[in-house]
Length: 316
Image (tube, rainbow, N blue to C red):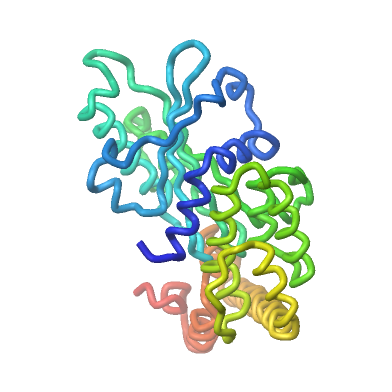
């Protein structure tokens, strides 16, 4: 596991971060039935080899007050692009998790399967628009076969959308992480680092996890041309940032300009496609939103001579 993935896993392996997700961000009536003081991670040796290969995934056991359990399957999506088939992946990993629980005798013979809540934590910039239920990935279904349609929905935590809403709680570690991930520049990050430092005085493990994530994920992305010193203290990182304010501001502006250009390209191509081919299928806007600048340029050139959408996208 590389340091990038390990940093995310370290954060979401801490109960304070997981509790933060459900206390102020994701709210549901069933949460009042959970004994949050006994929240515990499922040991890795309880997870099958196939499931363990998903290095970003973490399973938590939530004891309920009525004596039963709820399991949280956290799937942390690190990519900036949307995974169209995420619902299918969820279905696969859920089956593997149940098999692992049975194999390890965490479920007694004949006992009902415990509830598993699959959660996708998405940190990318484009808004998530993939199907939330595996049934929505399946094409046209004859009426007589509808009752055999698989049903499994996951809970999406779209960090960027939550930050943009401005409704995240202030003193919440998960919210602070999301705001750092989708920060508004150097001064915003400095302020957020100070808040994390103040909020984690009694929990050095969480503080170190944030320092590791900042060191190996946030800084390389925001200051790609700066050779970072081996600093693993939040306040030292904050002080170091002041020395690179110009580089950070430049990189932040360049990323904003690049994203703006990409959105403009996608909107223009959408207009040209509609003008030439009429109303577009629902899949086309999603495809344009998830495309790279290179994709958009290729499709724009293909549009000049294409006689169908398939020819534009090279699907023939």
